[in-house]
Image 1 (cartoon, rainbow, N blue to C red):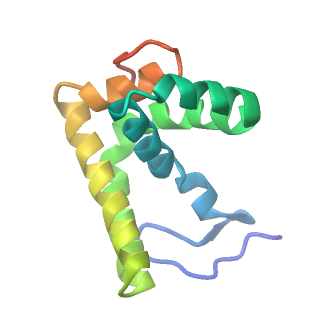
Image 2: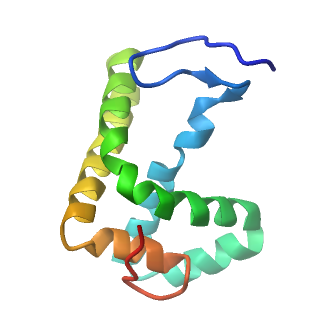
Length: 132
């Protein structure tokens, strides 16, 4: 596939350099799952499973999620824009929720880093390790 834009908003294009842009936007979903696993005390099991059954995804998230921390504030407007584009219903709610997660992570980076510390620690095996 060549680089063709099939939809472009102010902040986000649907296709960039021939790659679907959503592939680069999976960090929020990964972060949400990891934080839920941390909250329920099963993060170690999730980490072990990802390392064993999906090592490439684990490595990609391990690079992308911590690198996203200082940029989290930028994704808020992008996901709000996508939410408006997809229209009403569950799809809109999903993107609004991801925007809210990024807003929370951006506030965390500027604050006590409790959540970003847990996310960074997930990839090193150390709980609440701040990164970014």
